[in-house]
Length: 443
Image (tube, rainbow, N blue to C red; front, side):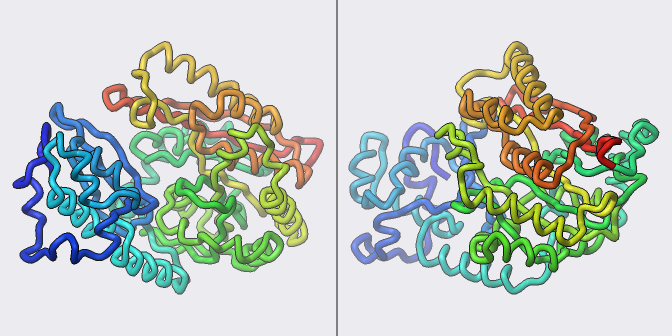
């Protein structure tokens, strides 16, 4: 760790190996260091001091790397355009030396946070291992939820008990889709407990399990044929449907970034509830990428071949396989809504007036979902360039489009809406649960 105020030789020397080659003997990737991607970088305050916390969203490195904020100028120069010597010269007024910059580079390299042979070798091994596996093991057991079968069973039943009073009003044999959160259970347990009451009486046979992909990819939709495992057991993948979808969409791009499924929580957080309430259902897991480019350009996703190919292909395959027969198929979207505050890069502090403003905007968003107004939903997000960072918008836009292609006109109800607020950390996440049932005249 680097000491605050100025760079300190002694504060990084603990991480220095017993022998280091001279700078001119270093490999190029250490001489011109580059922070690799993807990485999550967060600002966090502890006991009045500001820190930067680096995490690997791929799960390649399990432990986060914590650095004092004074390291930020060094990290900003790890772009491959500057040598260690040039970085040290630029930051000499802060007390940086070439050896200190090298030690920071080595610390990142040891944690596999630096682009170079160690990261590339580990990343290649991870991709190969994941590709060969038939089961996607739990990434969240022991952290986001209990790691043993009995403990997780009691945990999920406890959350379901929170929504028990809604059971009578949510009995339905015409349930077509659910919108659920993917926030952690600690903050979202009431919403999870309420929305999943809808599955008590009519568990589906197949579930199109679709949700947010939080990691960057140039591709829009990400497929996998793996079964999914939690401490409650294994949930089977409907490989026949997935393969048919991939063939219709384009096999190469369907699986190009399959690795994104490895750590993604938007789908996994739904699994324990599904295993409790629909244990025999098979899943069709799909991750939806970012619509950022469409929003920035004010251009509907409908104009993009990749997007249209997925929606049209998905509707075609599901209809052809008779999966849409009432009671057989459920579309389940694991999505959150707004992400605001300093934690997500906003300059303003979290205040009650701002929370009321977010609430009002969220209600407009939810009303458009309820009315299945897909084009207006896009306009709503694009008008302020997604200032609220609605991470579930691409998924829900896609779901509404699937409704259209399948000819589904629904009776849609908002079950729950919440704001998870941590004003001290400047972190606000909003989320909701919604049911989508067939209208009487379309049944």
